[in-house]
Length: 167
Image (tube, rainbow, N blue to C red; front, top):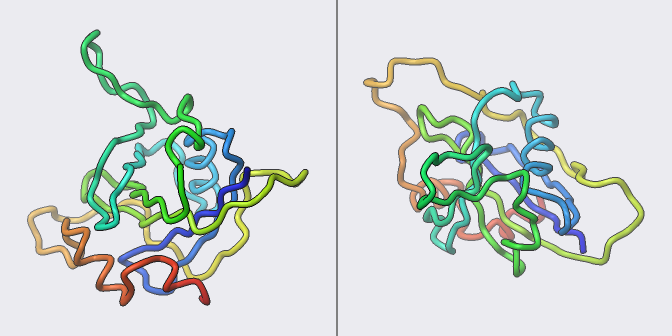
C-alpha cells in the first residue's frame, strides 16, 4: 500500500509538500526524505508525533532511543513501520524539526492506494520555499510562532489539510 502525505507549515503559507511512501517503509525513511527534499542539515534532531484531529501531540516517534532505563520505552523511527501507526485516511502527525523553538510541520495522510513498481519514498508535489530549519535568535524575545497547535492550523485558514487539496 502507498500512503500519500501532505505537509504544511504554519510559518510559510505557500509551503506544500506531498510525499508518497510505502506502508512497509519506516518513519526514518519518511524523515530522511523530508530532510533531503528540503536540503536540510541531516544531523539535527526531529520527531514525529501522532496527533488527534485537533493537532494535539500524542505518541512520539523519535529519531533515536531516548531512554536508558529498562522501564521506559520509546518508539524509534528506524524500526517504526508506517503501517503500524497509519491506519486511516486523515491520520494526522506533527513533525517537529526544531526542538529549541518547538517548530513543526502539519502532516496528514490524504490518500492511500495500491503499490506500484515505482521507487518510494518520493516527493510528488513541491510548492513554496520551506521555513528555515533552525531559528537562531534570542529565545526570550516574542516569537510570532507560538506553541498553540490549534491556533496555528486555524491561522492557515483551514480546518483540515484536505481543504488545501487544490493547491
